Image (cartoon, rainbow, N blue to C red):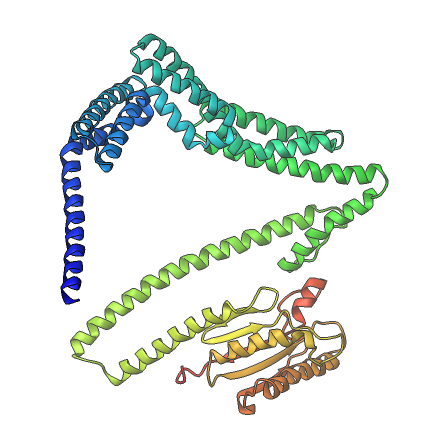
Length: 488
């Protein structure tokens, strides 16, 4: 029994060694017979012969695959050698033909690449397909040695590729405008808003002309197309308004009043009384002056900020120099550094809180180290001080903002507009501030000693009481956070 087991093991080992030896021998044969063929194929691939010399390349691949199959099946060695040699010859021919094609067909190949870059296969498929067919004809004729015929197809293909490229570029930049204008024509916009629609069509024509003259400088055509889109959409809007007026669904007076409303809203933001009793001219001038003043103030603040940054850098340099002269930190310097670090933390915490609120919920700003939450989204019923359930989510955000400043002092300020008596406004503002204070104690678990509730009535307006938007801004709760710099 032992003898039989040993014999079986010997047979298994022999088979494994024979198979391994056979695989090794086959690898050696492949390295021998395919070395030149592999090098020739690599050279052909390098010259893109599959595209530029397809006949020779395909012949080479057929012989190459036949040689591989013969080797795998253990056929006659001479047969393998012959197939590999034929593959090598065809690959070399293909590489040489492709090299010549790269020179002879350089122009059409550049046009082909430009069209592909413009996404012509997707945006101009019919022209692209025809160009591809002509390009293939040029390659086949060149491979056969018909230089004249190849050149003719080369020129035809180049023209088609350039046409496809231009169509693709126009499709990319002008298709949306054309769609809008088609919609406008179907809606008979030209009947109601001919001036605006005509402007859109002219802009489209200008963009089309610019692309025809210089397809690679797309900045101007893109800009013209954007303007054309705007005018087309504007024409659609105007035509609907004019149609309503003509159909007597909208009176001329209603139309003017509707258009005055946006100016009144802007005037409210600018805290300007919207005087339009003799038309929009006066209000327009006031709004222009207001925004010019805002722009000038912003420029001054930016300049002041830059100067302060330079001044701060100079002070830090002086501080380092002083440190070196004194040979270390003094108690005064340590206190100053601690104060500066605390202020820097407050600045970071302010930025964190500022991101918590949408513009319709609260305006967050600083006055020195103090942070103010102007609760524009916190509203009360007329004459009432009870907090409404719809404000609970907003107050939840307030709680998170307060948590950013541990052990801070909190002042809840109530404010009203000027309508109503002074005493009643003072009383109402105090009651609303106390209502918020009590909510913070009960719901937020903030200690009473950290909270102060103060009503100011109508005495501290932040906007004009002559307009409804201004009065709405004056009816407010401000939560003033005074950070404990030592706690931070």
